[in-house]
Amino acid sequence: MLNILSKRYLYFLFSLLVILPGMIIIAIQGLPLAVDFKGGSLLEVQFTSDNIPSIDEVIEIYNNYGFEEVSAQTAVGTGGERNILVIRSPELVTTINGEELNADAVKNLIVDDLRKAANDPNAEVNRFENVGPSIAQQVTQRAGLAVAVAALAVVIYIYIVFRGIPHSLRYGVCAVVAMLHDILVVLSLAAIGGKLFGWQVDSLFLTALLTVIGFSTQDKIVVFDRIRENTSFLRKLPFEKLVNHSIIQTLQRSINTQLMTVEFMLLALALFGGITLREFAVILLVGLLSGTYSSIFIAAPLLVVWENQEWKTWFKKPATA
Image 1 (cartoon, helix red, strand yellow):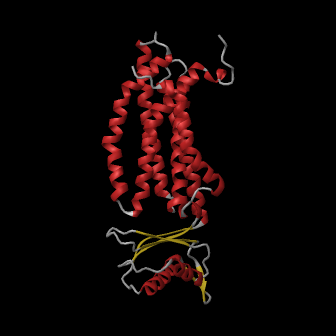
Image 2: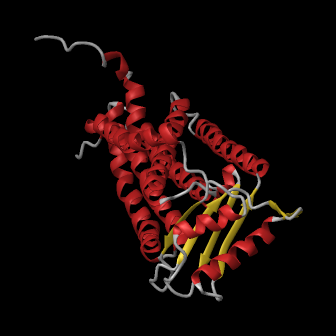
Image 3: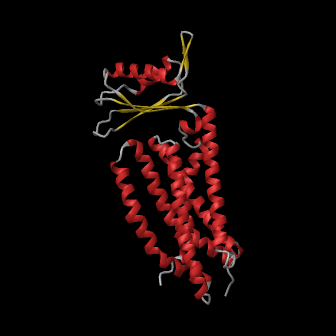
């Protein structure tokens, strides 16, 4: 029989190597937060050709209205041309000639200037978001609360369902630790994507993260439930062999369900979807893959480590013959 659990510390090391680069970027630069979480504006303008204003022209237009810390990047449209400008700036509220202008008025002025700079009167606004700092703070707090409530619900649910077997609380704790593993993988991916491709953590990212948490929890409950079932009639087996046998029983189901129903669809969306959905699709693709991986190679091995109390032997010298 395939002994999956024999290499459990290699699985832990692999996860650490995946997570660590993104955590280093976050520690140095922080998460690349979008306007949803830190306030500001996002303007996406699509032109009729690839003759679009340069980044310097865009920054100059914004500076003329008193907006600093402006960043812009180009993107490829559905027709294959690089004719989209994605501009991030502070909140678009300013005063001109003693008159206070709201975000929509300032946006219209900036779009008119962009059209003139590109000599393209038919340029259209694909997307515009303007979020004040107070709203951004509320969104951030509620996002953290949503993740915390999800973690608590997992522990309570597993503790209640698994209360008939010894150490049922361990199952809930291991499931939450593995769920945190998936969250860290997604955050690490977002940090690396922000560094390399200009990704930002927005409300769509939060939707993807909560979806990953849901799928991840489902996978872990399936594996743990099989362990619970086998505990009743394979009680004479050592716990490690029982868990390994349970993982093998659920392995085909976990892989086939993810690949056939979700991963292939998300891969197609990531490859052929528009710029707005590409980041969302990639995060879901990696996050759901991490959820399946952690169910088999993180959550169940952690349960075995806890059951065997292996930390007591980590720093002991092996006995000599």
